Length: 494
Ligand SMILES: Cc1ncc(COP(=O)(O)O)c(C=O)c1O
Image 1: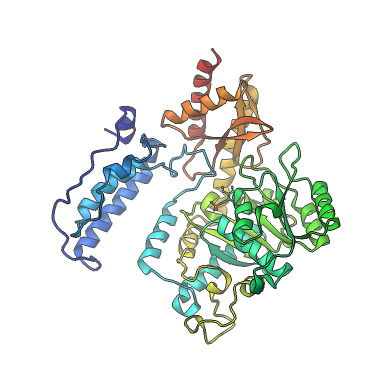
Image 2: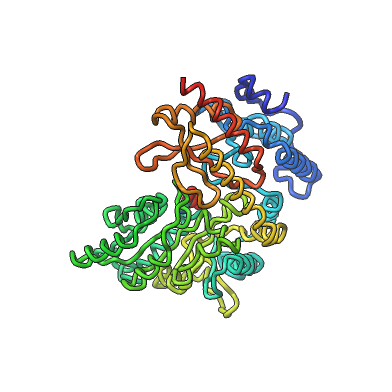
C-alpha cells in the first residue's frame, strides 16, 4: 500500500513499538563502525525514495495533537537501541506524523524545499560538526560563509559594501537589525538599558517578526507605528512621512523603518525607493525584509525590486524559503557590520573568544548573539553551485509563470475572484461567496491530503493563498489543485 493509499484508507499512526527490539547496538556511539556505514546507506536510500515519491504522501498527516506523544515511550531507553529499530520508528511513526513541506502541493506558507544538493550539504555539515564562532574554530565555515554570501549578493545585484552573515531565521536577523538600529540611535542603551522614546515604523502588513524583534530588543510594542497600506497592500510613503513628522512634533525619536519586499499575506512590495529616501531624510536605519521575495532579484526582469536597497543599512533574505535550501538559513546583509559588532561588544571580551587578529580572519560571533554557529553556508554553497545562477533563475521564472497562469484561470472563472495582484509566485483569491464558504473550501481541500493551502484576510475578507515555491511544483500540480477547488466549490454553492 502506498503512503497515499494508506492515508485514503484513513490509516492512523502505526502502533508504537514500545519495546526495544532486534539486535542491540554493537557500540554506544557507532562512528567508524560498519553499522554506521550500513545505516547511513539505508537512510540515504530512504531519502532518495522519499524525494522521488513525495507526491504520494498526504501533505498533511491525519493525526490529532498529542497522537505521536501517546505512541512514543514515556521515558528514554536505558540501553541503547539498534539503528534498525530507530530507523524503523522514524519511517513508521515520525514520517506519518509529518506535514510534508517537500510536497509539491504544499502551497500553504511560503514554500521551502529540501533540494538534493541542499540535503547533502546539510548531511556533511553535521558530519564536520564545525563551529566557527571565531575563525580559528572553523576557518572553512567562516570563509565559505563569506564566499557563498558574496556570490548570492552579486546575483541579487547588491554592492560589495554589503557584508553577509547567516542566521537561523529572518526573525532572528530582523531582531539583530533592530538592535543595530538602536545602537546607532541611542548607544547609551547598551550600558543603561534605559530607552529614550525611540519609534520604529513598518507597515500594517509587515511580518510579525518585525514586532517581535522590537519586543525582544526591549523597544516595546507601543513604540511601533504600523503605517497604513494602499489598495495593493503597500506601505504608503506619504503616511510614513506624516507619522514621522507627527512623532517628531510630539517629542518622540524616530530611529528605524522596516519595509517589506513580498509581504506575508499578499507578497506586496512596499515602495522601497520612496521609503529609502524618507529614511535618509530623517536619519532612520533602513532594514529591508526581503525574506520571501528577495531571491526574485536574481532574475534580470525582477532586479528592480531591490531599487533603493543600495541605501539600506540592512536587508534580510531567506534561502530557506524560495532558494531551495533546507531549513534553516537566513541571510542578513548589512553595509554597517561594525555597528553590529559594537552593539554586541562587552566591557571586557572573555579570553576564550579573543583572537590574535588578522584582517582576513572574520569572527562571526562578533556580529550575532549566538556564540556557536552551524556550518550552514555549506548547504547554500552546494545549492548555488549545483543549479548555478541560470538554473535558479529558470526555476523561479517557472514558478512565477505557473502562478500567473493560475491567476488567469481564476479571472476567467465567474465563481472565483483574485484578491491581490500577483507579484511573484503567490496567488490570493476567493470563491465568490461568504467568508464561511471560503473557510469551508479551505478545510475541505486540505482534508483531501492532496494539497495544503492557507488563508489570510485582505480588505476584511477571508481569502485563499496558493504559494508556489517548492522546487518540485509543476503546472500539473497547480492544475490539479484548481480542478479540486472547482469541484469542491460546486458543493458549497448549492
Ligand atoms: C515577509 C516575511 N518576513 C519574515 C518572515 C519570518 O521568517 P522566518 O520564519 O525565517 O523567521 C516571513 C515568514 O514567512 C515572511 O513571510
